[in-house]
Amino acid sequence: MPNADGTQSLGGSVLSAHVQRGNANRCAPRCGLPSAHTTLPCGRCLQKPPPWQRLITVSDYAPPLSTLIHQLKFSRRSEVALALSRILLLEVLEAHRRTGLVLPDRLVSVPLWQRRHWRRGFNQSDLLCRPLSRWLHCAWDSRSVTRIRPTATQHHLSARLRKRNLKNAFHLELPVKGLHMVVVDDVVTTGSTVAEIAQLLLRNGAATVQVWCLCRTL
Ligand SMILES: [Zn+2]
Image (cartoon, rainbow, N blue to C red; front, top):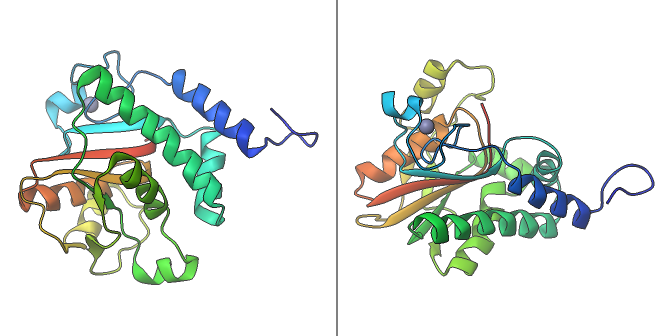
């Protein structure tokens, strides 16, 4: 529903994002990358599976979802956060109904380094976790995983350097033994950050770890 100036209203953008979700390319169940099969492991996962068990995503990084995510990160419009959380919830519930996806005991936000958090004032991962934990009746604490040292901005690093950059960057603040955990992030690209957190949770005895994100892209 474009406005006169060619932009979309929030309602129109959310509706289009929802349609985009319905048309989303088929994704492999574990890594969330494009695949011919939505229930069988893809070639990449057969060779080198990511540490998490399932990845739920809405679509790849394209408008209008990418526009809404930009608004989530750089504005304080809580209605954008709620709308995006709702779209992610629909994806999760559908996977639960269709494939028996395990619903979580606890959600984990991807922490921003404190200083960056302080500058921006909020963490977009928290904005998604808050309503999701309420709707799904599961636990969430914005500080269950903390970043214990600053890491270089990841964008320009190779996959190998990203991994080294993140090594031991996170600390677990709460017990997770036996729990079904979900790491929530807005956009997952190489997956190195969520992989590092997933490994931390599994090392500490989590029963399963899933990753939920709005966009999965490489
Ligand atoms: Zn895969």
